Amino acid sequence: MSTVAKTRVAILISGRGSNMVSLIEAARARDFPAEIVLVLSNRPDAAGLARAAEAGIAVKAVDHTAYPDRVSFDAALDAELRAAGIELVCLAGFMRIFTPGFVEGWAGRMLNIHPSLLPLFKGTHTHERALEAGVRLHGCTVHYVVPELDAGPIVAQAAVPVRAGDDADSLAARVIVQEHRLYPAALALVAGGHARLDGDRVVFTDETAQADGALLSL
Image 1 (tube, one colour):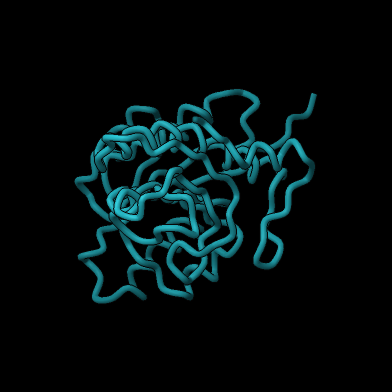
Image 2 (cartoon, one colour; image 1 turned 90 degrees about the vertical axis):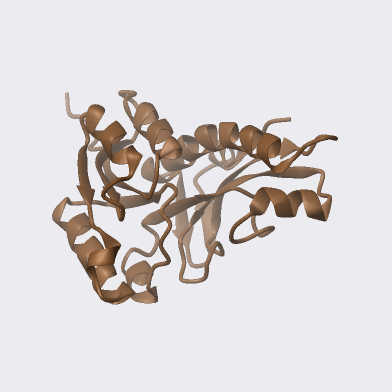
């Protein structure tokens, strides 16, 4: 009996890779439509590299400090991804800003997870900013990567309530739980062909897939 080939995925990290672990664990399921074949970091000492290696996944460090500029680093990164036959890239705490050329080369094939309900609170310190703004809901977003930071079309979101007495740490702890649920679900939608990029918006194959892109957890 023939089997459908799984989408070959690389995860890019800069640190411990907690979202990386959630993706690796999800991909162990026989019916998961993606296979994690490479974990790559711009930091050779990133703790996530050892965690991925322990899981039996190929790892690679491309030290950004060894390159004179972003263009040459991105070219080295691109070469590693293409040599591994990567079809889809997942950013999981990868703390580098890509050149537009790199992003365009992977257009429609690169996902990121961001700790806010985009388009709110792009950039850093999202939990502190959510508290300062007095929002009642906060959360996380998986989106396609485009040249503008945290501005790509949204694949999936998960929300958590902002509670009285929350500080940035308590809010972040609740959001990260949802990140670990949301990213594997979003990857499954994209790798399984249930969500795809069409211009500047995400198109879902059916209402069930669209509902899977909105995981409200209150």
